[in-house]
Length: 314
Image (cartoon, rainbow, N blue to C red; front, side, top):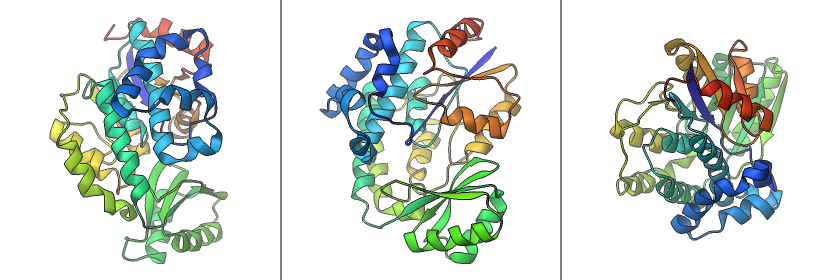
C-alpha cells in the first residue's frame, strides 16, 4: 500500500478547530511550540479561540491552517506512519514540504509567516471566483476574451474537472462571472479572500519572497513530492524553491497533480491531513474510485492508521 498525504490550504480554517484533536491535543504541543519560537506568535491560541473574522485575515489563516496540518502530520509520525507521496493544495504545499522532510517544522513556520506578510502587503485589489460546471478550456477562453493580456484575469486554480477558480481585478472577475453564467455554469461563487492569489496581481511580492527563500536551507525530499504549478513531481531542491515562488503568481494545477499521482503509483491510499473534507470532495470529482480518508474524523483516522501499517514506508 502506497500512502499519499494531501494537505489542505486556506478556506479550511474554522473557530476552535484545535479541539477536533480531542484527547490527542497535547500530542500537537511540539508543533505549536515550534510555531511560537519561529514566529513569536501564539498560534495555538489562534486555533483555539480566534473568531471566524480573525481567522480570515491571511496573516492568521496561513499560520493556523499550517499548524493544524502539521499537528495531524505529527500524530501520524507518532503512530509510525510516513508518506510515499506528499502534496498540498495552495498553502498546503508548505505542509507537504515538511511531510517530505524538505523543511523542518520551525523553518516552514518562518516561510509561511513571510509569505503571509508579503501577501498582505500587496496593494493591487483582487478577488477569486469559483466556477462550477464548466470545463477548464471554456473558463480559460472566457478569461482571455475578457482580458487578452492575461495580466488582469486568469484561471487561478484547477481544482477539479468541473470546478475552476478565476482570479483577477474585481471588475474583470465580475465580467467573467457573468460570461460563465451565460456559457452554462451551474453556479459561480465569489470567494472571500483578501487578494487574487495565484495570479499576476501578486507579482509585487515575488522577488522579495524569492530572496527570502534563498536564506532557507532545503533538503532533498525523502518521498515523492507533487508540485502545484508544475502538476508533476519535484526533481530537485532548486526546482522546489522556484516552484513555491512561482506559486504566488501562477495557477495551482491540482487536478493534473492528482491524476499524475494516480497514474504513477500503484495501490494508493489517500489521506486528507488537516481539518475538514475539502480535498476529499475534490477527489470524488477527479476520481471517485480512489480510497481517501479524512483524518479530522477520528474513526477515519483510526482506519487510516490500521491500513497504513502495511504501507511501504512503515
